[in-house]
Length: 206
Length: 206
Image 1 (cartoon, each protein chain N blue to C red):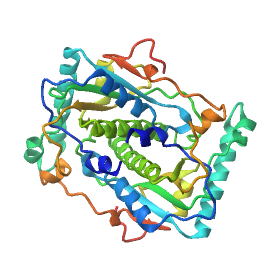
Image 2: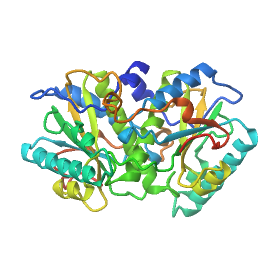
Image 3: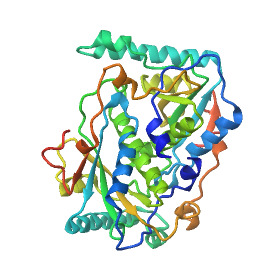
């Protein structure tokens, strides 16, 4: 269990032309679906992209957002553009995770309704990610898209929001540490920076 | 791995008077900290509550919100009040998970900045939950609180938001299925309701 948690990576490099056996995908989806959810609302929906034209449409949206992100950066634009940030065209399976329209659940979400639904959906995605790693498959969470545009492409109903384009499938190798660290984009911080006792201390960095 | 995913439960019943060995807590916190995060921003912070007065203050906030939720319900109020919804006073360890103030990370969050930070923090909490289960400890995510009031109690800086009160520790037994199902509060839905191909179909329930 701990081995899987520590070996999970946000993958952007996939072996093209592969597939995921149905029974493996089913096991993984069941793992996602046993995630916790506030008030048992289960706000996650998954759209499996099988239509090549739809996959291409998603790839174009992601590329648009990659360029928009590069343009919004004050510095490191070229460095950002040199990074591989997604594997939408190469991965064996492409899934879109959608936050369902609010079903009105009050239990546990009177004060933070959207936040708690979103957290529940994220837990399901994390379960899927860990199941993938246990199956020796890579997964990448791509968030480089305009949710309204992707929602239109997928004909989502009002109130639903795409939150993740999930690239899934066999990978050449798992990164030994986060790819953004390997590429010297950013280094992760130590656990001791993240944990404090009894109150937020002056020394705990933002 | 799959066994842990399926056996994890949102626990509200704990064995009082217990403790979690330091090395076990450390392993679990390391598991949380290896969670994925958008742009490697690692927006999770954890406050370990050791001060009994602080724990009591949190318990009172949660109780206030439990009553406020009951009052907001149009029906099933008595049934809700009869449910055990938290184990703040009984659990061995109490942690508060906080979403850190926005550090300005642009990578992967130009279009959904807060959502993606929140999802990252939720993934870390899910890792912690699974690590707890692997250690045969229960965890419960309590979201029954006013975040502003809890933030004040913990002296959080501007922009930080408490998103979870996490009850952790030995439990009498793990629920065989979600407690809200056992108590006939609500039944979970089947996986086939949650997965569709290529577009949101008319039959996919909200």
